[in-house]
Amino acid sequence: MRQITLLLFGFLFFSCSGDDNYTRPNSNQEPTGTISFTYNGEVIVLKNASVMFGGPDSPYDLEMTGITTYPDVHFTKYAAIMSFRFIDEEFKLEQIDFTETERLGEDSFTQHGYYARLLGELPTTGFSATSYITGEGEEERLTGTFSGTLQKIDGTTIEIHNGSFEAGLDSPINTLTR
Image 1 (cartoon, one colour):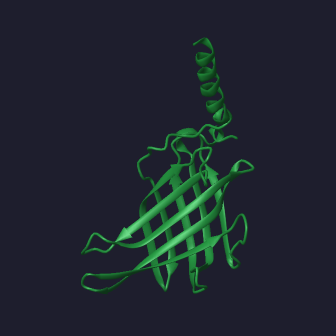
Image 2 (cartoon, helix red, strand yellow):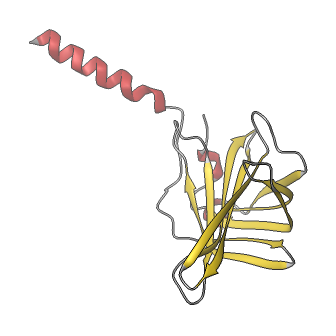
Image 3 (spheres, helix red, strand yellow):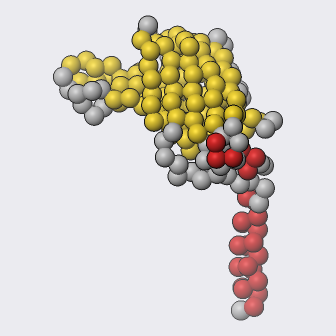
């Protein structure tokens, strides 16, 4: 019985020790951000963008999501998801995913998904982004700009210009360490 108890204790101890050097801010933050850009001559503003921090096994360290809906039906018109990596004490945009929902009729819609990848394998050419952390403590904000070519998986491309984003961060950035 004692060996089983020690084995169980050892399993619990070692299974939790992988997270020891990683802490993250509270992920249950109210939406406090904005993503905006120009697409097809229209300025698109995605208000109340939400921010979620990833965990140690997450494919991102921070993700910002914004949507806008059609005014007459509760259906997404535009959506953007921006995934960031925390590298060299700053957030760097790893990938942006943009979805446009085209209305074909009264109750008929089709979605088009585009993306640009900036880090990792096969980065997208013709897309750039900058990001900055401003403020301190509970006043910290992630701000930045982006623009360029987004592509579909089939190779179709679109252009977005004058992109910007800003979001409140609910905990000091220096807690994001690995």
